[in-house]
Length: 447
Image 1 (tube, one colour):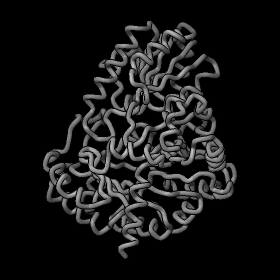
Image 2 (cartoon, one colour):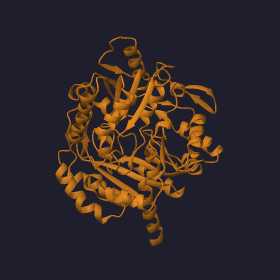
Image 3 (cartoon, one colour):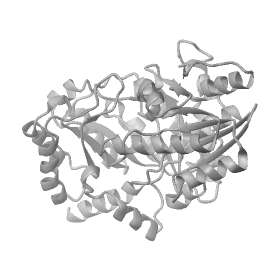
Image 4 (cartoon, one colour):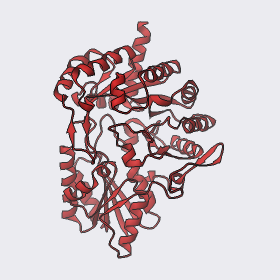
């Protein structure tokens, strides 16, 4: 069958993100079907771009990947849902193809969105195998269910990690085709040179608000460290790619796997500088030192709160002492850090949130990102922090006074101005690294 995959994400702040999910689905399907990708991220007229692809390709199935339900400015989901609705309507007006929705954003509210957006089918969770099964069924003249769910694992139904050798760990993720990066729009790499790499899926934590266990499962499944290092080394040879971003929910858990990935990267000469997401729960001197040798330049850390009370309410598996120790380790080994703090969850008051601001002042990270709580998950009512307006007013007053504080929703050190600076100066790597370097250099100079 002729399958057109549409990456609907148009977010470019703080930087555009390579649509790894759509590319992974493309790789899984094109062994048996003809596949094309249309990426709307850089299109001035997205509907016209989709119409042109339909005219040229005449697809029988159109898959639409919905990455997010809100923008990176955390300004609510209403505008994005309206945009998605208009896109599906534009596709429907042009083509009789079967329309299938998927992606992380869709998977958070699949039952609602398949109806709201008027799609024929939807794929919930991992799409490689589920979408391929759906297309195969359509090709055979069958009628698949409206919603299909991706399995947690094929090779190991329980999702357990299977150890083959000390230096190699394999799971079902190693059996998947590599993302179809030959279909990537080169403008992603022209922007800041960053490409995405995934080392695992799943999250064993039970944090109160997080979507990752819903999307990827609670059993952590990891890729072979050798295969990951080979992928990074291969990306380093592509013109325009200067950095890698490990996009796992938490790179450093399990720590043994993270350490093995670092050792494989070191063995290949640390081919690309990289950044990742991390949790204060499992950093120690050995791992952070290995990360530095392997080329890690920065870590985005979900520290979430500056009070023990809120960490417990949020069911975080670490303490404030862990956050402080993590910051100390990164300073010691020359890795930049950006800590994210979530204010207003669980009806947190302004007075309670001020304790977090005081903690951040003491912690003094390179970058502190503040988000006022917003709930997207299907199992909850879409809501916002009870004291949202007051919390934003507090941040509007306090954040501009601190050079390393970022508030996306208020545009504090975030937005089009920063994007233009990155492009004008042709800076390479995630944009927050440049702000963090300037911040750390000023602190060292002051000492």
